Image 1 (tube, helix red, strand yellow):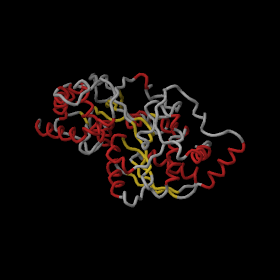
Image 2 (cartoon, rainbow, N blue to C red):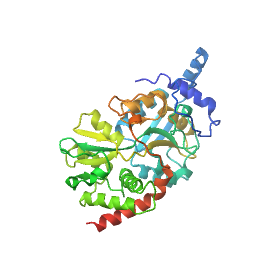
Image 3 (cartoon, one colour):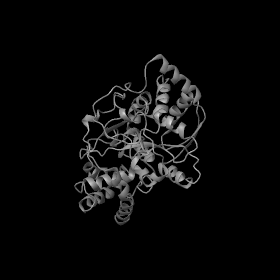
Image 4 (cartoon, rainbow, N blue to C red):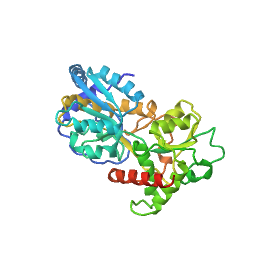
Length: 366
């Protein structure tokens, strides 16, 4: 696939750099993905072509995205811009800590992917930049604090193995307490997995009436931990794979992983917790004082372009954040899901508490 309009986006970026510093919200009313992105005169198209030809140079990207995304986006970006990318992939925490350690002399230019809340402790290491595409983003998915650019949504989903579930219903967190599921639940270790932390945090918060302080939520989590029968998975990947492979019956995972299994025809099915889903999003950011700042801005505009956002919804098995972006037919309509709003800062503030409390309860119930 060729990004036919990407050269125009690059030109638009060069005209507005430095003028966009805020991250205001707009209504969710659909806009044309074409409107306002570039002039349509022959003169402007020629200028865009020349801009594209002159871009070139280098870019260093650290990423927590999966191989499918990286193996598609990076070559496509290089082809469309002439910019040569050096890529280092790893876990979100690993990449962010590396960026922190290199802050005196940054090696990386862009961090691509990773849950928004995980970035909050590292905000001093990111450059302010609002994409030229920000006005086309869905309500609630605009630039965060002038630095973090949302690239896709990825919320919690219950996934089970259809060959193992039998007549058991798993449409809520409460359904995990069914005695028949004891020892058959896959949970990634919260100490090493963002998915594990968010699962436990969501359960505790939801069953404590959307509050952090109180015993009701942790009483529910205690009952859930007993159902684990002393087992946790090393990572979220191990957890959802164990369900797809038939080693475990059910897990709480993220939409992107579940959608990928559905696309491949795996023997799994999904539901959204009836208690409600707390929406999450992955973000990208430019490193402060990076060496290739202009190319980094071009990259941010690239991943938020209409064509790349279509890829997120049709090929990368996640929900795009741009208005009007395409999604695969088997991805449930967002309007059919009950979403619960919660400040992303809260999970970051309570992360250590969640991990420590989980570990204490886990040790006690063995």
